[in-house]
Length: 265
Image 1 (cartoon, rainbow, N blue to C red):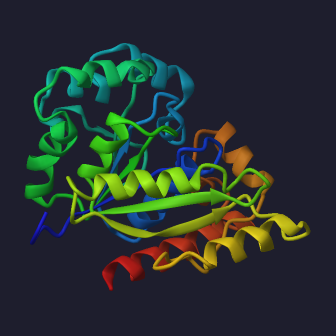
Image 2: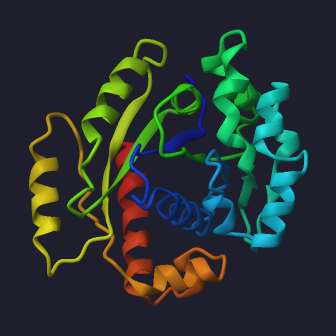
């Protein structure tokens, strides 16, 4: 939205296991820790972003109730009434629902269905209460991801450094090209390489392949494999909050600074 100070960023990859929810959660936490007001939107039926901040019982209760993203989209309501506060200052969340798995059917009969999320966020964005809105998209390509992209200013693609990490990335770029017609202002913020094991050749191969892409920024900061991430997930907290001294926490803190500087420029 022209003139709006709120930046809306989508984290997406049509391949599951890319670390997009973890990346989204940790960037949000670090931005909030730096004094920025951040709204998270869990757009994935797997609920991983919600589980990064709340215990499983709470997340499942929200998913079954009527104060979640699925209900808001189904009713085409303004989203400010669906915001919940996380345990952390400056950081709010619109939780997801397992029913998001059927959102494509819900959208199919809607008028201007590609813009339902964008319309739902209009008042929140115009209020400029938040500096950032970060959206975790599901690992699919379809009408709902198109909705998320149409509501976003930037898209960030986490890519896993593994033999299958680049699988389907070509389809992702084709999808982004097709969305350009209805979301001409959407920009590719860049690619984050995740789950890096520097002892293996996968990282080098992944980096070399990505660096050959034209007009695609690959962030200098990459996220290495770290057991601290799994421990933090088990404790329903971003790794920066759970163990700030860990290697992955420091990497996510640096990545946040790099992304913020890139988007500012």
